[in-house]
Image (tube, rainbow, N blue to C red):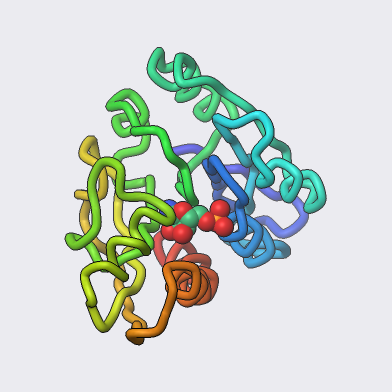
Length: 197
Ligand code: GRF
């Protein structure tokens, strides 16, 4: 394990990398949560999408960012970059590519994901973003929620760390369900990450 030593505070500060493919509202909350923390800092925001809004957010918050390709991820080049940058912990926040085993092996039990539903329901390949909320709506379920879990080779099957639910009413649209889920994500994801590092 690598540590970034902050000489001013004499604390070892863990380096977190956030991987995101889209808007990055969770990434922003996590960055803000760790601003001024003596435990960890967001050392890098990385995206597989050149135009992803998460990169704008990182820039505004003065966090270094990096764009990489699916090829970089699969070849192990990206994993090497994270290790060169002395990243200790990886956070997936709306990251849409499957994580290859080279990255999982580089960060064993040190990579976490958030899923916008109560796994094992509405998980697996193709179940992301609005697909999840539309499926919840179509099912008539009276609740949904969030699942924070460790990452392994299979989509959404790593060890569950935290879940919490919110009520869904008959009249909620998939967009309204998404909004409710985002509220939970923003409230809990930064705190759960902090408890894991
Ligand atoms: C979140 O709903 C998260 O659960 C899912 O992707 C979405 C990302 O949202 N994995 P944002 O980009 O953080 O706003």
